[in-house]
Length: 335
Image (cartoon, rainbow, N blue to C red; front, side, top):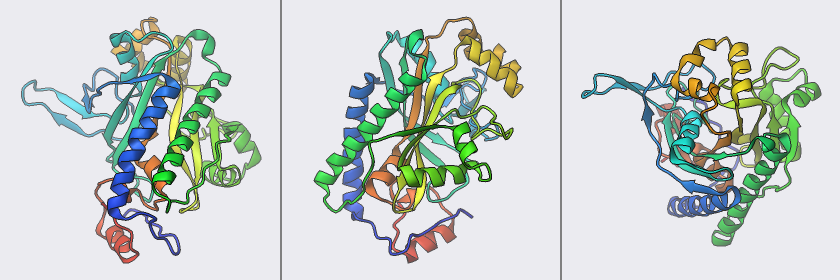
């Protein structure tokens, strides 16, 4: 059964009808601001890919993709987990120049997701990627892009609050940056999620840098596949969600691997065989552009900006009967 928490005295600030209107406005305005901030163009993206290409993201390495066979070809396809690798190939194929990028609506099915207030089997996010030059593969550039994304989010909240005065959500534009190792050093006895909770409650808007590499404890802050983000140049953006009193990850992003970091990370992960896949061969041969990119959760952002307590209030998905019963008894409308 999924886990559901109903905050004491929780009541949605918006009606069901207003919520749908607000989600539409939120998506339009945020896309506008994201494109302006990062110089992006919208493109179409796949829902499924050929599993032999190496393009699908395997997340932490244990999630099973939804697989199905195609009658006409006799071959299998897999529903994407994310578009981290596909976007980089697309930038090359479409001829994007340095400084420009793409964004797209990414829809996925994560059948092994543990369901709760923040997690659903259905995943929807804005996936973005842009071509960069070698001289900006730096932490300072990563931080500048993070600040631009946070600014776009806060600008969108301002628009929503003008249109819907009942919204009382407050966000901080001031981003506090901290490395995953610094966070572990501060709270060595806590788990990674417990560290996030304590730190984000204090600082409200936080960027944790360095996800995937093993820390002093011998464990990574969180798992990342070795073949898209450079583990030294990636990060998670988190906000404090007042309604749920919890840290909420809104985006996972980073500067992508180059030939050197890909080889090193494949060796650390014991996945050297991936170097034989088409995507990885092209990258190691220097045939793909240097890029940075990430995903920004659409339903997560809707939850945050509209002050919703459950992701099912802003997206249609499947939930067990007990979750639906608890939600209904407490006036939480799951779509």
